[in-house]
Length: 220
Image (tube, rainbow, N blue to C red; front, side):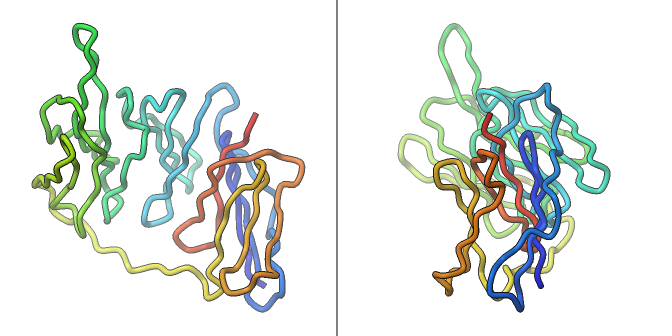
């Protein structure tokens, strides 16, 4: 039996199972892994699966949860940084679009922050109509749009480590919500749909790289 684990944001971790089974089943109780006095949303797994990044109210700032210790620290306090930020392929950096307001005018800038040192690298000037950053195959290149044109920028960052490719289990689970209810299904088995956390409303579920955990926001 395969197990799947869940976090909620608050955060819940949910373990789940299902290889030799006809249904997918939780392997343990959900765990809240964020602070009740803080509003967090939009969880995103590091490629290695050992960290979760997420943002706060109004998508301001980025926080990191170290799963080995359950420690949470703030990585960035920039406005707009939490909107569709992007992990680097090696999981050592996060790219984001920061929002600055000067003389009542908003401008955007592409920035990268190193997770371990929290050092910020500014990769663009502050401009209007700046798109979201997207990594290339490695740490060396970021892509973004400006005025509906595609640009690339050399980050000056070298690859620090190579991650082994991770694939979802053979069942190819997908996770989603319907009316704020968490559901899991196997792509090749229409009859495999299962509902989890039936008494809890959740949104934005994300499956871990190894397919064993789900992180989601508790809808309160």
